[in-house]
Length: 95
Length: 423
Image 1: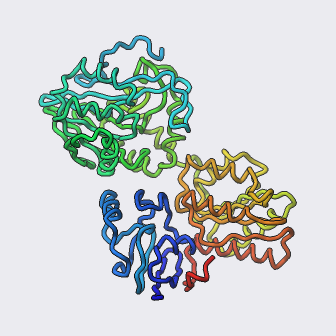
Image 2 (image 1 turned 45 degrees about the vertical axis):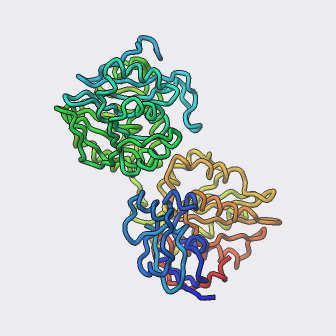
């Protein structure tokens, strides 16, 4: 299975993950500072800054896009409960 | 005096500005979490300009009749050009769908974050949505000789909240901030009964978790000329309104100077049946202190009550909880503390758990889950030790303390791990 590497800048941990993993599945296990509310892409609690490698995440769904827009999320931000890693290297930190 | 003396007409609070709200004297609890010993009020206001009439907020749905009756005593529906929604919680937006039916020409002004909530509120009506305009600080609406100016004051206590300033009159419509659950038909702060307890109780239960936003809002409000504060609940503050702003600043500021502020702070709470979890707590605290830069406080929960620890938790950067496992659970004093934190903001604080156990040791994982649920970050796996910690195990406790100190002070060495290797 293709692998990817996601780095949580706030805690200084890089995790090798299988492609298809969502950020939420990794960040909670390593104890990164991203916090979660609804976990269903509605509340925007888990807004996360994508420091680099945003192209290595699957594009946001219509729902995620709308929630980001409604909450005035700056460019380069995603919802960690929705964003799916597709390969390469990604660096993130809590928004 | 709760309802006596008040007619079904509007009450003038300033020239051309009327209260058209409703009294709810028999309510005894609000949103489940607040006690309301003498009820509450839902304050709504009408502002008349030369070119139109503005309605500021509405009332809870089952008080709509009296709201419309009072509104009709000072304005016709076809005169309403403007509806301002400072806060869309149902106790203030309950009469909105009906108001929009009666005044379909009115434009709705609300904060950007309120738009989603407006759509959700109007969903059951199935009708055409009104024209609504998201506004922020310094945006204005001209009513003809009178100007409404908006202040972006989010999280007081929902993301959508804002204040609206009537410029020419120095009158501030504040939504829930500076409000309280206190029902008195005399309406004004200099004529009602003693409501000071209700004012502070409201802050403590509604606004305190958002105290940083309270301070941001106060910074916007303090420079304004203030002749009157018109909140969405409780007395209208016409006598010395600025005193209430000062009091909010005091309430939102820690009472005593935090002597540990130059360092990061870690508070270790524990409870121990046979002294084993206590020994773990002491070793963890010593480990965290040993690196420097972290001020550690150690508290035995058996020596206090959950409520008094809330202040400590609010101020701390990190929290560690130690509990033995009894009947497959953490013990009640731990849960009492962890169920008392809705009145403070703990999001993003560092959390950890530890404890000695005899048979199964579930407490540590259960505490960790609760800490995550409270939106703390739990970067270091907790420590479970079977019965009496030996010297190696006490060293593990010290090491846990050191790791927490590294997280608090940002002195982490970069680690590379594989997801499959994580629990």
